[in-house]
Amino acid sequence: MILQWIQHGKVRPTKMDKSMEIPVGDCQASEALGTPVVFVGASETDEQGRWALEVEKIKCPDFPLLSKPAFIATPLSKEEIFLTAEAKLVNDKELVLSVRSWDLDGAAVPKASFSWLLRAYGLKKPQSSDADETAA
Image (tube, rainbow, N blue to C red; front, side):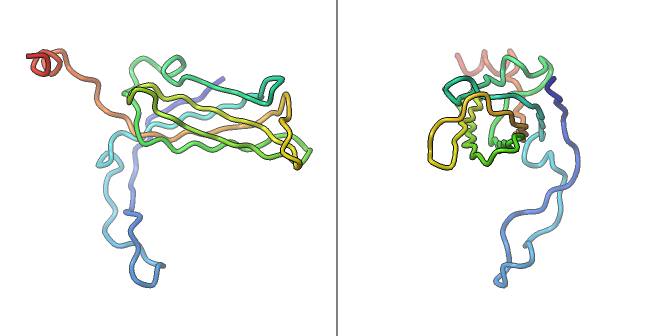
């Protein structure tokens, strides 16, 4: 099961003051950056310690196109392992998530269970009139 939702709320700028302790700027609606979209799931790596997911294939059809991804993965095993998580935009439109699992010596760990979270910003889908104007 993959949970997915559109997150409405407030955001603060990440620019900090000279002390590096206080954000500069006021809170604003999260939609000012685009529509925040969140996905949460759990999975496991394959025999080679790899996992990949094309987000477009699993996201709800009414969700917007995605950009500016932030992706994390957390191991669920009791053994000490490392995970490398990556969110990559392919062709500026296809978001692909990938995870690799490693032991402390750098060898791949097969069948490593993990949970993951993706936050991205939704972009409006091009309207047919926009596409017609662009083509002209």
